[in-house]
Structures are given as C-alpha cells and as structure tokens.
Image (cartoon, rainbow, N blue to C red; front, side, top):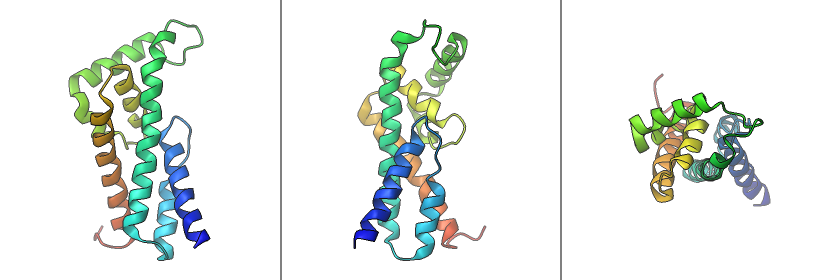
Length: 148
C-alpha cells in the first residue's frame, strides 16, 4: 500500500514540477506506472492532471505578480516578447489555455494568463481539460487502445 501511495505522490510531484518553469517530464513516469498494470488508470490520469494543473496555477500566480518587475534589468523576458505574448493571448483568449500542455509555449500561456488577470476558476477549468486530454491520449497510446 505504501508503494502505491508513493507512486501516486511521485507522479503528482513530477506533474506539478513539470508544469512550472522548471524542466521535468511527467509523461515518462505516467507511462512507466501505466505499464506496470499495478495502478488504476483513472487514478493515475486524475493524479497527473491535477498535479499538472496546480503546477500551472503557480505560473498563473507568477504572472499575477511579475509585471511589477518588467522594467528591471534582470527581468528574463524582453518587453517586446512580453507584448507579443500578451497580444497573442488577447487575440485567441482564454480558449488558448486548452493548449497549455504544449511543450513549447504552454508554460508561457499560463504565465500570460496570470498577467492578463484571467479569472482563476476559468483558468483552472480550461487548463485541467487540456492537460487531462493530453494524459488520456498518452495513456490510450501506451495501453494500445488507439491503433496508431
């Protein structure tokens, strides 16, 4: 039982960290746990999705507070880049959060959503849907449920 809880906790932690600006891949851990056959697929998908969504909420919080530092020399994003990201988000809106799972640009979307003050409930719902769909497709491929 302890090993089962440790597996879920490890997956949650990996998914959480992977959604922040820190580099980590939760997909490999999910695939490994799926292949053991020792865990509920639904519980693994829910654990990874919730962890990844909450990690994205950290990015949203960073976005809410980061703009006050945008004029500092050490600020990691150039003003032109930040303006471009904000224009893109304004153009495509909250629905772009369904793509927050993308490996390139997904984390930036969640930060920009915070900067532009996307309401947290809307943010959490759309990010959760996108990330859960990604993990579900990965699980289906891993378990051979899709003929790809």
